[in-house]
Length: 117
Image (cartoon, rainbow, N blue to C red):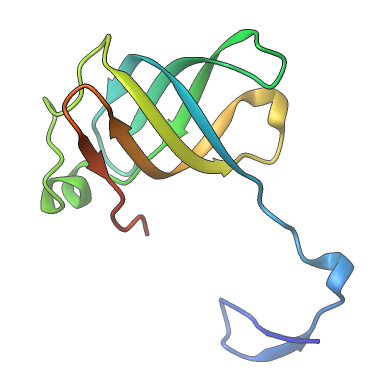
């Protein structure tokens, strides 16, 4: 199989077993911290893991400048907000880390599903 190298742009041979598949996970819980900064912002959410045990999840988001252009400000999320986050699971599931794909605050319907580059 051929795949384009993201750094050089050249086509390279890749074996299917070498392609790393990313698990997409949805968590629902309470926001305990919102770090709005560059180069990446983070939200920390207390939510159950796949065994039902409460864990502190660290979710990486875009930088403050990027989020501001998408209408997300420092005061958009508050500690105690109930949120639903969809994200790509980190390399080590035991670390409880995600890369943000989308976030929803069901209490008022606010949501984000913008770009994260």
